[in-house]
Image (cartoon, rainbow, N blue to C red; front, side, top):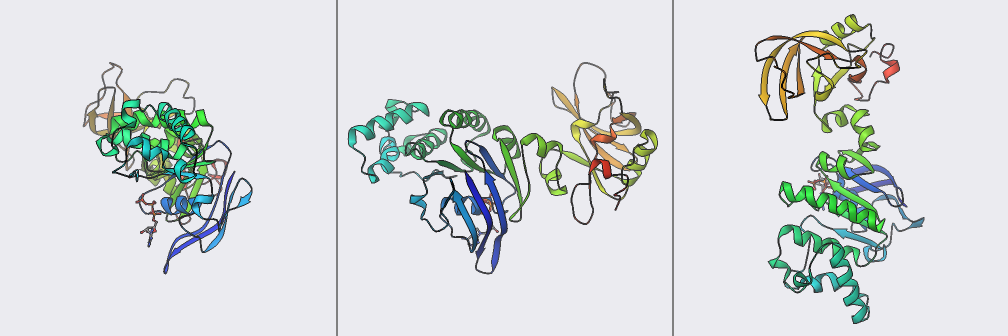
Length: 355
Ligand SMILES: Nc1ncnc2c1ncn2[C@@H]1O[C@H](COP(=O)(O)OP(=O)(O)OP(=O)(O)O)[C@@H](O)[C@H]1O
């Protein structure tokens, strides 16, 4: 459906994107995720036709659109600041593109009302000035304005980032429902990993203009391909060579002691995990415990590593700060990366591929 091949984007001497390949499937909700300044918006704007790449091609539906202006690409775009016309009514904002297309006025009114209903804007709101609406309502207008033109592709650039956390969660689901209802291929930009994991079919993790990994939310979480992805997604603790040596000694595993190693917070526990056949217990001392209601966060020092743990509060007495404890870990949960390349060591190669 969408193919970016060998895309290079430069601003003067600065290379924002050195060489980007991205393939998005029809109907997919595809997210570009990464920290501020890593090139997500630049990639999206290149796809939309607002930026001309210095090299490479953009294909939509098999057609080369690299030199086609934005308005000929059949893409709808929603911006972070919504970019609505502040002096126009909601109806006029949504109808704008249809009027430019010289759609008949009865048809325009029908289409505007239909899309407004689907994004849950009331008839009353249609006649309000956009400036009178809340942030969440303005965001719905921006989405309606893009969808009313029935684009082939919907591009969303951090559309929820100006909203408060509760509304963001609510609109996240509504956007996702709308996307499946329309079956529209969607490319979404965010720096919020939670949003990316919750909404996407697949995610591309960006770092300095380069895609480090493309995969389903679960695959990038469980099998982060690079150290950057491991650190950017989820919450994990670095392990020390002493910790790995002890883990190998107790379990017979052959983990590399020279690799950079990490453990996700939820993969260590203070009780022997049920069915955790390969889990072994390492001695440690509780450095701190913070109570969060449903769970507590711990830091446990074990063999030179400060392990962060997320432990469910289930009414069983938990060890207090300063006490000795045992921390249970399965060697298979340890994520290992080459110290020079940052690439993941293959699990089966960990014993032999020790750098
Ligand atoms: N028009 C421009 N002129 C010069 N440099 C630019 C321009 N647009 C973007 N850049 C630079 O390109 C890099 C990528 O910017 P981009 O906006 O794509 O990042 P981003 O990942 O979307 O970040 P954010 O989440 O902060 O918007 C940044 O270093 C930015 O300063």
